[in-house]
Length: 307
Image (cartoon, rainbow, N blue to C red):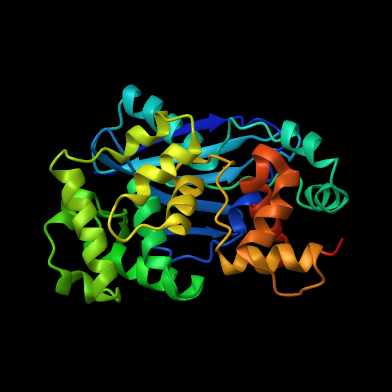
């Protein structure tokens, strides 16, 4: 039996659902997908797998979501309340972009870019572990290749939710991955080293020796990246990317990222090759918003925005 609930959410404006969700979401329909104005994904709520289907029923300046929740288990009021918090977290619905936009008025390039991409918000992973594992997979390979490998890992080892003759997958938990051999994870396309890193971290979490979620409570981003960098296989780039993706901390800035540097170069340096130090120097003009500014620049390249 499929249990269904319907809810509505009103994000803090401005919020462009189409822009925020369509960008970088040409995903596997069994994992997450944006199509025909609707986005869907499976999330874990109080130990249950719940399918989330979202559709915008508002505008950029007056945003509203109509959301359908489906599960093979009964969806309680507590599940709905927790589900709302998780959805808010994933899509950063409570985040107010206006302070960021006001600050960017000091920078002519960013001022124009934020105007063209008004309402763009980055998504966040449901757990810090998911962000870290994804960042490890992405090390030294293209985004397209890493996304393909990650999708295969999710389908090979993630939990399944079945209803209406369809199968959907949730990102595998640390407990699940901790029980795998490196050879099993390599079958999903990971290199030996990456499989080793992810399994080792998963084992630390499963045994209670590592609590990545507690990193969210650390105010100093440098302290978070230092803590993450102590893990085997996690360098500065991976740590900063994890902080951005898993915690939405805009001070993080993965300057070693080639895509980010190309984006900065395109808009500020006439497409000339720049170093990580050059990128950091340019980023100082964006203050505490440098991570979010970098995201806007990457999306600007991805969508071929002219300014």
